[in-house]
Image (cartoon, rainbow over all chains, first blue to last red):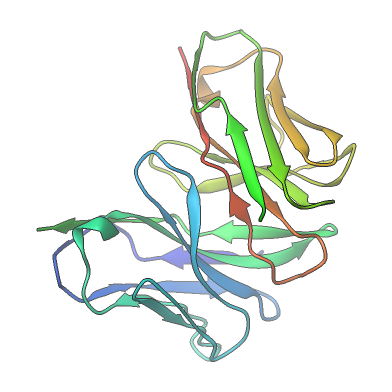
Length: 114
Length: 114
């Protein structure tokens, strides 16, 4: 079945460092791809999305490009802040029994030190 | 705008006791509704989804059940909780008409079974 693999965490960076969190997927067809963020004690918030090949999703300084040739959707940010500390989930959306199903990666915990 | 509400936010229950978690969505009609569980240190697992009133699909066999008595209400239940039911439960919704619509999550319920 479809699956998502994320780089293992935890990831610890200093403020203003460059961030990359790798995400690759296995899927039949061309699913929509998403990054969700989970701040401590909270639910998941949609961070960005891309629905077709070469689309670039962006939000709050984060970017990810849908790469069909490498089946990847890596998350990047040029200069991280302490407030970016959270768990980040890569996910793909697949049709499922008349609805849609999000298949998540395991999540990557990011800690930014001042 | 659409909003999703989950309650309670936290819950501590003894083994063998019943469970009822509620989720409601406002500002939309006929949403697809989902229950996910996030066990400690692990990713997110889809438990149930529903494409309409009274229509429930289960992803994995377990000690839990779900019901959808109204269009925008989704309930997660158990008759007798197990220790392994502890976790963070997330309700989510998406518009039923668009394949590319992302899921929107509630703030979650943290359940501890003692």
